[in-house]
Amino acid sequence: MRFAYKANANMGRTSMAIITVIEPHPLLRLGILQLLTDVSPVTETRGKDYSCLEQDTPEPGNCDLVMLSVSSFEQLHHLASQAERVFGPKAMLLLSEADDMPHTAQGLPPSVRGYVAKDASPEVLQASVRLVLAGGTCFPMRSGTPANQPLLSRFQPVKWPPVPEKPKVAANSASTEYEMLGITPRQYEVLVLLARGYPMKTVGRCLNISVATAKAHTETLYQRLDVHNRNAAVYEAVSRGATLGWPTITGVGDDQKAEA
Image 1 (cartoon, rainbow, N blue to C red):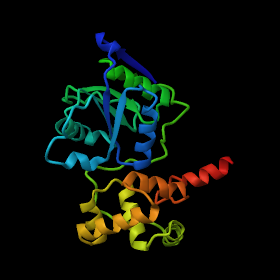
Image 2 (cartoon, rainbow, N blue to C red):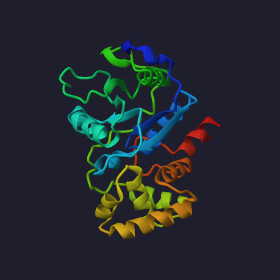
Image 3 (cartoon, one colour):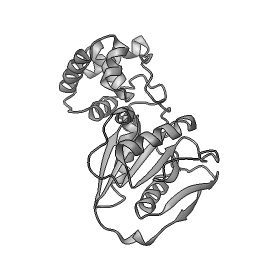
Image 4 (tube, helix red, strand yellow):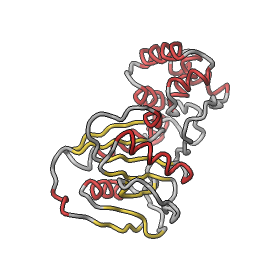
């Protein structure tokens, strides 16, 4: 992919850069955060899902860059406006399933300084982040040859706002996975919903339980998996070979065994 790059005099800045990654898929979000560790030694990264865009009050503190995952162009303006309202970033870099940004994408917040396809190579992603942090812009000129190093592109897009529907998981797969993870069937159902980035209210609605009960199941789930948050729980489950109802992925543990 070719990009139109433009930089300014801020190229030499060395202060701590705060980057917020808004991506609904926990594993993809973790992958992006891992790539960002090589961007700069003075960078603080934070991972969020779409639920952060529903909050009424803006996030405290300064944000240099928001990397916003966009599943479809129909959501583009709404997601960008919400991210602008909540985080007030100095710059915003859009991550999309498509290679080209549509010509009809007008009226976006002025903080939108770049656009990168999710299947871009890690090098392109890192270079784009560095350029935008330096005060430049990067937008695709034309569709080019697909990158030969896709960035966790096997995940399917997630719609926003989250649709309160319980994901369909094959019964034999679910029973095998919750037994493998050492958790109860209900805790597994909660984990599957958490893996899709749903907020606790949506988890409760999907399972027809109260928010308090959903939180209780979540806390017990964390204890069983010996983790402390949603991202760690999903990563731990997939590392042990669980798919959590995603037909397009295999567990990290399975991949590691195959490589061995």
